[in-house]
Length: 177
Image 1: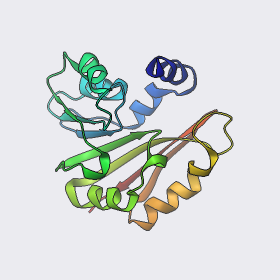
Image 2: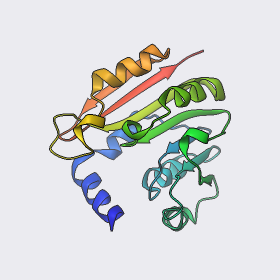
Image 3: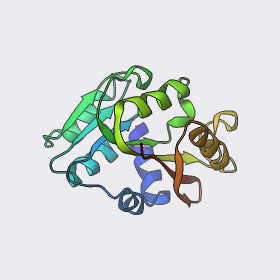
Image 4: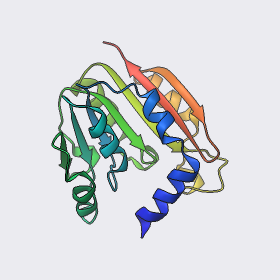
């Protein structure tokens, strides 16, 4: 199954515990996990925030049972079965994209959504594939770190953390006002 393969890759090549630590999760954070997939990160977020909420956004209806299974014991999450270009969530302060931002066709709309609907400061966290990686999506849709940085800084975000891994990288961006 696809999610077993993703899980194996993630456990071997992505230091997700270090990424979670860098996200500095607080008990009252409101987090959107865009393209939540099987809910791996959503579950970690929900475990770490006691007074906040996690919105697990996933457009594929076939994946919803995986999300429900992985998040069934959590009371502080909401599954949103919607294309991320149509999401209407308010007052979040963190948003997370794991290897999905390169697929988004409505990037400008998503950036405007983040700026206009969030509480400030807003922190955005992304894991993407390196262009030189031997794994990942087709090269023509991958976004290198410099391209991603330009996309976010052109929209008014400031760069935060950058970490390089064997096949991926992690970036964070923020808006204060």
